[in-house]
Image (cartoon, rainbow, N blue to C red; front, side, top):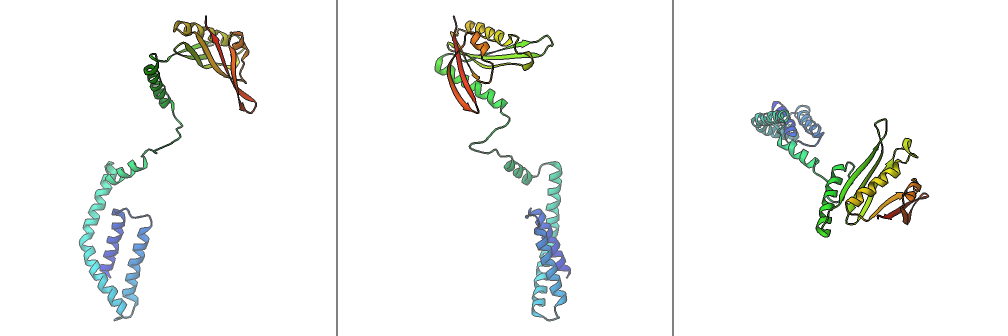
Length: 235
């Protein structure tokens, strides 16, 4: 009986050392209890009781010899876990944190956008002999807040306005037109002879028309909206 208990304890320790699947200890404990009951409840001299007792004795002696080894291994693993140097845990973390391969969707891509824009500028420089040059303009209101923002990129002889927005509370004050005029001056200084942009039909396009830009293309995007491409030759 004592040897069966020793073997059961040894097996339970091994489930921890070997990181057996969760719940494995229940099967080990159940087998130990069944063996103990078989040696106690079956009649004396019963073949099954004799076989179980002999097997339990043999396994028990083995367990008594290996029990200190299993306890030592479990102790070392606990100490490594506290120190954060458990190789098994490090391998599991590296597998868990392994990045997905192939096509993936990225939510926080600000850094990636910067890297991609830099790479695209390099591609353009090698192909065209000139790299895109970007500039930003802003309109600061009397309150100190930024009321409007324009960002442009010049490549070759073309200036593209990639960002243009005026805060809703400051619209109708000519801020958008001032930003466009400023963009035209910068574009001319950088050697551009044409300025272009893409705007949404839901935006106020009148001030762009008054600034001399004309629509050259329009494409529906559904829901009653459309993209409008506009451009102007700089003199």
